[in-house]
Image (tube, rainbow, N blue to C red; front, top):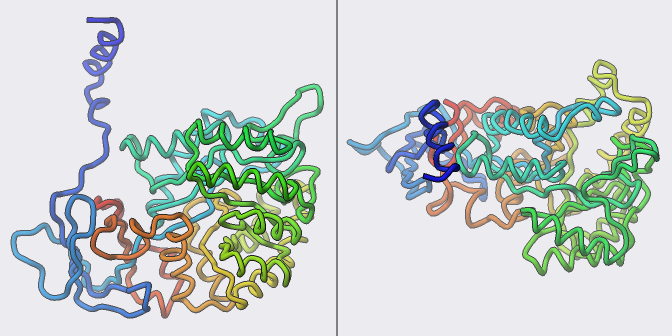
Length: 425
């Protein structure tokens, strides 16, 4: 017996539970018998529904009485929905801003991510796209969830976001003598090509690029373009050739246009989008991920959390124009995928975003579609998630009532299933 085998044997002998920390296997066959099910494609409601689940996937959808002999989950007053999708999260971050961030280590961020993964799943979000993390902590988190080490949503992870030197997503809080920079800092066509390939090497599912300045960062302007059009084209070309989509953080109008012309798959935030940006995004079929609820949360909590002055003024300025501009893009027919920027506010509040979309002019069904069929399309997973249909993952949530009449019901899911395993009931 070699030393490694001996070590593992001793660990398992001392702590036998260690060997059992794998994913809970879904029962071979389960039937959910619910009062209602919403077809998010059509908006029609099916009553007295039976969803049969085998091997973690949906086997059939029908109506009638529950079959005898099957394991049946009875939800007589509930409305079933497909598991929700958040296309813009930061699971390994918390609402911690400014210089206090420097005291949070990468190992601690990984542990924070494990906590937030469970909270997000229990909030009804069975799939997320994590767009930005230090030290590839979101890659490790994704793998831990997939291996069954911890509960959490399905995670499409970006690793560190690409940033110009000194831009949003670089490390700008420390003075020169520390020579600090972020994991994703890269400049020039060759530099960004190398960085895209490097992040993919270490496990990125999607590439995140900071195309403009941001709000919660020191010394940059949200309206200023960061990468040039040539650099953005190089990023997209390498990412797409290597089978990865690209999400572009972009507040400023020029950055939105350049990122869209370069071929990114989604614009995150889009605060200063103008008529030209709307036109270009529609021509390219580019998704907008609006992240709007954070403005409401910040207005209510900025003083309490001590948002640094260098961020507070930018937050006030950007949020004053963002809602108006994004609502115009929605009305104009720009494709919308649901995203929250959870971590700017506490994880688990993701579903508050729905009510904001409705306030901005969406119907409740359109808001739901943004977090189901639309988000699944953006992620490239329409064959796996986004609807309750045979062959797709058994990712299902339920609310007690009709979400088309009261969208805020989504803030309190009564039931959450992912891959045939119940995580909340």
